[in-house]
Length: 43
Image (cartoon, rainbow, N blue to C red; front, side, top):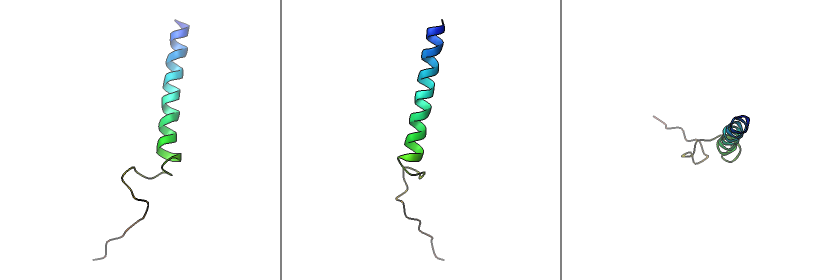
């Protein structure tokens, strides 16, 4: 049972680190649909 718990913790932590890397460092904190430039609409 301890092996299963350790494996589960490893999988969860690995997934969390991967998602953190993908969302923050790889995209520099921007949303996937953002082009990187901020455009403001003028009225």
